[in-house]
Image (cartoon, rainbow, N blue to C red; front, side, top):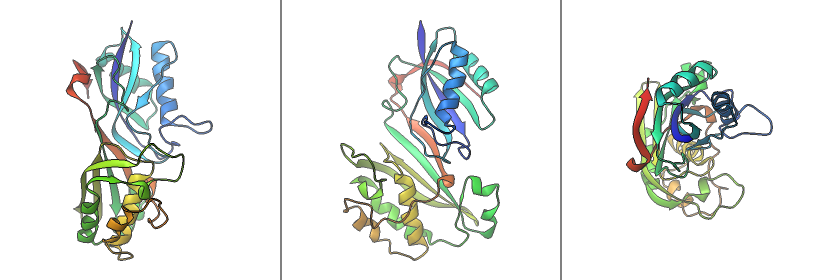
Length: 259
């Protein structure tokens, strides 16, 4: 017999080629599945709520897996943290209803993007998790642009060129800029779904607005476009972190274990 579990994973994505298993390169999925397979004694498949790019981090990435019945949440938490490399950790494990899928069952996802606005952001320690812009940004203008993307829109102007999708509609439920302190800014965004590179392209465009390179009103015009030719280049991956995902209460069973 097997049971469905949801693991909440945090990782520093700097030295990974992204979440998804690749033909070449060390992916988070590859490392996590190797650990799960070792514990289960047979191959395991791990499904994440989001497919992060190379260099992107996670604070609480939900990952679903089926494990042998003997693995309690508490034992999974202990065992996974004993064998995972230092760049990854599991901070919570929850028992979930059969059929719960970390990607398909999620009703919304939340990301943050951190930017350093002082010269000290060039530090090799800060630059792992921040975009070092190293100059002041006009936060009011950037928030005006963020307000324009709130709600449901076709976001193909902020999607990477690639395989066509059934649709490009996303419902943005939160889009907020804030100053963390005198040297840092943060963008937090929540939506039902995100397109490939969407958050990074939104941030890249809004930073150009904050630097005075383009007006905030450009955001409304870009939302009417059906290509990304006029969109600013995407922000670097290092500043982006997957924060969390939301699921219906019916997905969760009573058993759980956390730090």
